[in-house]
Amino acid sequence: MKLSSHFIERKAVDISGRLGTLYDVSQDKLIDQYSVKSSEIQSATQHSICRIFSGAQFNNIIDVLKEINFDDGLLQSILLSIIQPSGISSAIDYTQSINKNTRFLYSAYVSKEEISEDIDEIVTSSSCATHIIMKTIWGFEILCILSIPNDESTHALDSLLRNIAYRLEHNQKDFVLTDREEDEISSLTNITIFESETCIDNHNTTLLTVFNRIKSWQTNENFHQPLQYTMCCLESLYNNDHQPELCDSSNLINDQTLNIESMIMDIDIWIKHLVEIFKKIPKNFSSRTLNKRSNDFQEQFCNLLTIYGEFRSDLRKLLVGIRRNYYESIEIDNVISDEYYSLLQINKIKKFFYKVNQWLTKALLFEQLNNNQIRY
Image 1: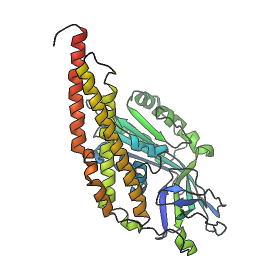
Image 2: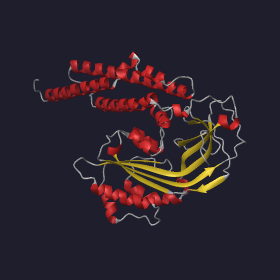
Image 3: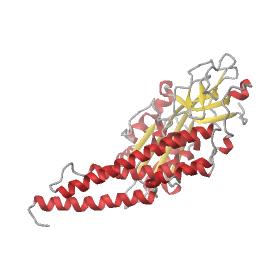
Image 4: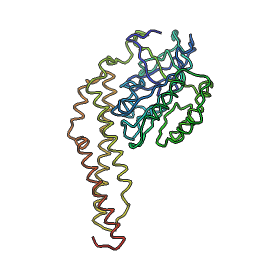
């Protein structure tokens, strides 16, 4: 199937889509669960894909997901909770820092491609649907994130990963880890794994378990799921004037929409830092003054979260509206620069974080001295 301007490709975040299923690209959601028989099933030209990346290549986890074919529009939908992440897209919630000592191992296995050229039997009664699935790529994929302590060398790990990746990439049927490789993998401690839902939906799964099971997953279709959808625009397919008018996809990714990615990522990171700080604050202090200060900070944080929720809601509605051609992208700048949302400026959130952190350090010291009956 040759792609034209009427076709789009999307990573399958919701894996319930089948050939003939309708899709709303403005919200990146499956609409109606139609299903038609495939007119052609092709074996994949390349079954196994395995790639290794260094954290030095990326600024954040969004850049990593883009490297493995998540497009900006889909990532923005996930960031703003228009859709919920699943499988490897759940890596968007990865909170650890990414640096030169971070390694990413991406492995995908493609089992088949289903194609349907004949979808005339589908009647599009949905006013929300914009596209229809005409091709589905099946298989499974895994994203492993390994973080190495700063005082350790990465050379041994890089050599290990390259060796394993080469064997997986070339689909060696006799892929078995050596005893030495098993020992080296078992010694790794800071690993987070994101996988297709049909494999293991548990980020605490060990890397050794993944490598030992990967061959059985390849041969058992029960572990295979949709990885990618190719969809045709309904307006071009049926010449239907009643289909939603969409913004030209080439105009959807610009400075304004990309600004959403960087801003939401930055705010999310600092909100998570603040959540961790507030978890450390005792419910009650021995001092009324400390209790009052604690309550003041709690109120400020609750206010910040409320405003952030409203900000995300406004951006969600705006982004869907832009995709539907209701608004211009410049409206994003108007929302971001709104004085009501000024508390969400990163420098202000950082200042609040350091203020709370500094106060908490002193407050805990005061409590310790007071418990030891030492005057302060």
